[in-house]
Length: 212
Ligand SMILES: N[C@@H](CCC(=O)N[C@@H](CS)C(=O)NCC(=O)O)C(=O)O
Image 1 (tube, rainbow, N blue to C red):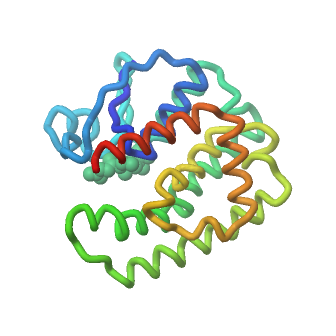
Image 2: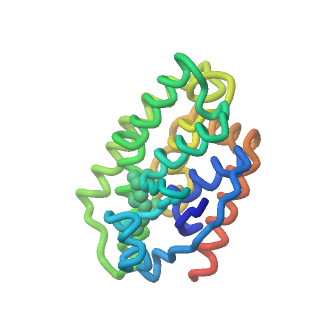
């Protein structure tokens, strides 16, 4: 099984953590997005979108981190993708993370960090919009987590990784997630309960430092 990604990417982090948790024997193939290797023809054959991560297991070729995570959890029969009603809850929050929750923080990362690297100015409208989106959806998740240890109950599922992804670049996006105490407590719990989440977060920070 080959995973193509870059340790700087929170989407790669989600998949690596899943692979660690299910003990999948992954061969990690670096696609350096800072050097734009994700735009090389060989990579575009795997993912025509040119985004990381991508994944190959025999005849199966996947893009979209959540799809790869689902594949790994299914293949190894992991409780990260529970059976029954919690499976649908997991799917619900995973889709919500992509459609809504990550949009604001991603926009802020683009404006406040990625544009700076490329020497482009921030767009004040986009920053305001990113903050508005972040707060709108963080308030929903904060309320949901008021009486829950993890997003779908007492144990961690793939949805927790999908929702925690924006914490990977919080110091760079400055997305206002720290205004939501239940969110902050939940993320601290995730770091404590899933050592791989903390370890892959440290890998990401090391990769950032090596760029500077
Ligand atoms: N929804 C996609 C997002 C993938 C994505 O945006 N990856 C970023 C890194 S986290 C990327 O490839 N950026 C480089 C680019 O778009 O050129 C997934 O979950 O896989």
